[in-house]
Image (cartoon, rainbow, N blue to C red; front, side, top):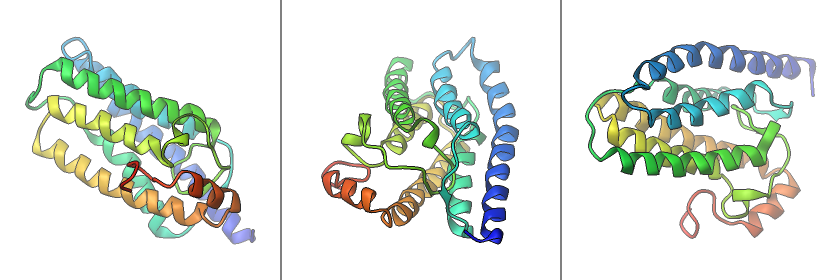
Length: 204
């Protein structure tokens, strides 16, 4: 690794942490304000904030330094932190709570499996095969999607829908970028042979 690329990686690492802390404070404040009337939103808050905590405590790795993976990683992580509770309730709270609970369980199990290998920008911090990674290669993003759909169904607004649509596009691009980096590792190439699905078993 050259001195320049090392400086870029350190700058990206530091920038990620500051960026997430700045976004997390207003996100948490907004969710705490509505907690007495919409207690189920705590599930979305936990799901998003767990990722922030793990990024702040992660271990170093071979991180992408090109602008594209950095931009989509920041977008995929930052956009969900811009949503706020409110809007139209389209389904009963119980239905939304079940969806958010399932999504949270998937994302928590994924993050526990990754532990300190979890990061924001695409990187190789080691190949993980345990937990939900035995079924699909990127289960954490599936957990995000399920939980966020639950949130949308009880907090629907054009703003929330547009934010999540953009976030989901960024997350899909993020998966593809992570694959591009990880497939250079023979261990990951072998893993992807044994677990062929990225997000949806049998489809993608």
